[in-house]
Length: 487
Ligand code: C2O
Ligand code: CU
Ligand code: CU
Image (cartoon, rainbow, N blue to C red; front, top):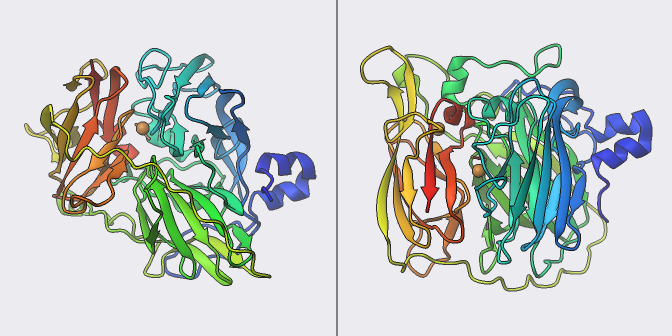
C-alpha cells in the first residue's frame, strides 16, 4: 500500500484530516535526554511527481507558506506551499524540466544536489540568480547511466542558502533503480531542523550561530515531529533518508530492526551492507532496507561531537549538544505488529560501482578548509578555502575533462566541515578503504577537525563551471566555497 501524500490528505480530508496529517503533537525540542514526545500522526509523504516517457516537467514556486511544523502553525517558506516540497521521481536518461518561480521577497535559485548533470547554461548552474517576481526554466538531462539513489533540491543563492533552507525550501529527488528492489513500503524521510519564535515565524539567528552552524530547536521528519510509522513483522521496507539540516549531523539508530544500506548519496553497493548506526552529515543521504521485527523501535539521532570554536571564540556552546543527550533525540516511532508477512525475495545484485583506485591521476591538489581569525587583524572570524572567501567571478580550480584527480582535503580548524563537490561525486580513499573493499562514493565527505581525507574524482562527461563548499550552509554563506571549471 502506498501511503497517501500529505497534499492528498489535505485535499481529501478537510480540516480534521489536515491537522492529523501534519502531525499534531505541538512539541518544541528544548530539553535534552528526556524521552521524546508521544508520537502523533502517521508519517506523511510529500506529493510525488513522476516522469513519464522520459520526461518530467514541473513548476516549483518558492513562496511564504502557512504550514504545520512539528504540530505548530508556522509561517515558513515552501515549494508549492509545502515543507518539504514535492518529491521528483525520475530515471536515468530522463529530462527533468523545472520552472522555478520566485515569489519570495529576495533572490533565490535552484540546485539539484548530487545529480550528475551539466552545470552549464540552464542546467545545474548555481551562478544564476532568480530575482523576486521572476522565474527561470531549468533543464537537466540525466545521462543514460546515471546512478540510482536519493538526491535533493534546494536554493543555492550565495549568502542566503542557510536561511532559505532553514525556512523550509528543500525537497527530494529519487532516481529509480533500473531493476526494481521489492519492498512492502517505500518511505521518504526528509530530516530537517528549524526554530520558530512564539508567533510561529522562523527565528533569525545570531552571527555566533552562523559561525558555529545553526541547529534548530525543532527536529522534523517531513515537517512532522515524531511521526508514527506502522508495519507488520518480517517485511522489507525501503527507507530513503535525506539530511536537509543546515548544520546538524545525524547519527541515526533504529535499535531492534535490521538495517542494510543499499547505497549512500548516489549509486549502490554490490551487496547491501548491514549497519547499526549511520552518520549523515548535512547534505548526505541514505538508501536503506529495513527488515521489520515485531516491537516498537524509535528512530533516534545521537549527539555527534563536530567540535567547536569555543576555544577560539572564548565562549559559546559546543554544537550538537542542546537537543540530543545520551539517549538521543527522537525522530520517529516505528511500530511493528500483527501477522508476519512472507519473507521478501533477495535483492538483485547491483552493478559494481566504478573504482578509481587504480586510475592514472592527472593532478594532485590540496584543498584547505580554514576557520579562524583573519591575518591582518580586524577581529573577524573567517571561513575560507585555500585562504580565500568565495567570489563568484573567480575560478579557483581548473580541471581537464576526461581526467582523474586526487584531492587532499585538509581541515586546519577545530571543528568538522562536511565538504561537498557539485556534479562530480568523490571516491573516498585511505585507511577506511583498503584495496579490494567496496568503493566508497559520496558527494559530501566529512573532514574531521584538524584532520584530512583523500578523495579521487573522475571529471567525466561534463564541462563547465560549478562549486565546492562546506555543507554546513552557514559556513558556505560566510565564504567557505570555491568555484571549479572543468574544460
Ligand atoms: Cu547541497 Cu552546493 O549543495
Ligand atoms: Cu550540491
Ligand atoms: Cu564548515
